[in-house]
Image (cartoon, one colour):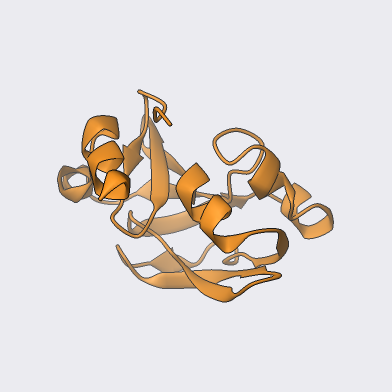
Length: 126
């Protein structure tokens, strides 16, 4: 599956969309497909300072419970409250309505360690 061209990706299967000094983060289609039907998402609290690649929450599916990591460090400025009532939105729309949280960037250089869509495509093909 071709990855959206305006996103960056982590090796842990999160995606990042940069808009100015804010990064929107979610899990990839590959990740949601691997997890199966998502039944619960625990998101970080607004105002929390997070470290790049740190664990910030949990994604629970009918198959497994998985830690949610952030590929970008900074301050949590928004969470997707719709996931509280409809966690399966991540399954249906992993790159749109299923986004998880937004981070105010503290260091734009953090994106240099992330993968391009082509690089991520090669990773999941292996």
